[in-house]
Image (cartoon, rainbow, N blue to C red):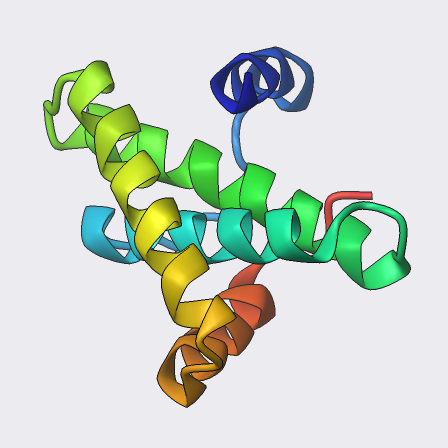
Length: 113
């Protein structure tokens, strides 16, 4: 389901607005953390909506980084899924490091709306 939303957003958003490059690993890590945080928070609050936007951005960034690196899209999707599942555990456990990385990922996320 999430991948379908990402695919639809790619068509709507078009090419990224920034020239800043991130590594595949960083994009996957941020995608996993923001997706997990978005799921845990829900979309009812303003914070939840910003997390959803960040998750969308990082998922797109991870797929673009995968394409640039010549990675198979299904492998890239699986990497994001693993990162999300790991991040749900880490955020649910209250890991300070996971929260700190999530904050950095959110700070690097451009405004989408």
